Image (cartoon, rainbow, N blue to C red; front, side):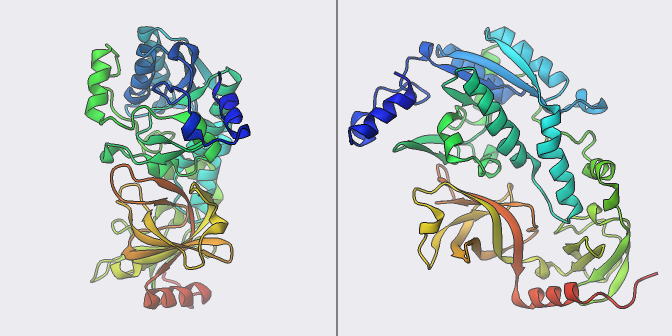
Length: 419
């Protein structure tokens, strides 16, 4: 019996799922592995390759699919690239080694429309986007997932380091065993429908264990270098991509201190990010940091380190994965943990619903927080913590004095420009 009819039957007779749940296989699906088709998203790296190998060993009907997302010059052969050139060949060789069918789908146009173009537009608007989130949100967990369903697959499996667990009629996401490889920050936008269909076999494993499994299986990618975050940037210079796609974004302007003083000139706001210290282009007695980007007036606002300290963030495009709806949150909000950068630990916070929007008050100041980044919400900070979803940062608020100074300078244009 397929999963959906089984669950429908349970609902109709009015019993709790936990009382009549059928025997499940290792993917928490009711059929025998040999009767369960699983599409594996094979990027050509060691993680997804091991997922395909493990599921094949367990007797599943495995179909490997690799997405060709771009193909441009140096990126085809560059170590650390993803989803192009050599990586497609690596995925094909792995599929041959473990004996599963493998298909390559050309998603270049879709990837550009859903990921690259919005990435460039976001940077041009003074934000700091996270393209890996957009890729998971659109190309991988929407388009590829639909393809997996068309192939009659019972699940789509990936090599992400995150855990998925049964939670009543649905599934919930949790932090993985390997905290150093935790990819929950990049998966917060996964919808409940997608979570129910996806499987993440590496959530209980560490990276060294995965590489050891790859070596045991005789996979050619066992020692392959991990891909970089921004996979479509050939030499790691994202400004080159933005300059090509959005030449209008390269507008010289003033570098202005948060107290209103004009300190110098810059060649384009897109060359700066919130929290940046080095390479600002002005000399000062005390260290200065980029604290705000104002693309409308082509200004880079700088200030002392304390002016970076963020106390509250307002989110847009909230994806809520809690058991109750976001609208059912109590007026006083709920205590949880928030993560505003992928490299930082979740910190205590309070989530509130204010005028229908999600506001997150952080218990301690976070530095380097920028619009466009994600704020991911958890029920704890450690191993196995559940992911409640999150949203993209639309606006941040700093310590009261710095916030007042910033508001004053962004309302009033500087009178005199530096020569």
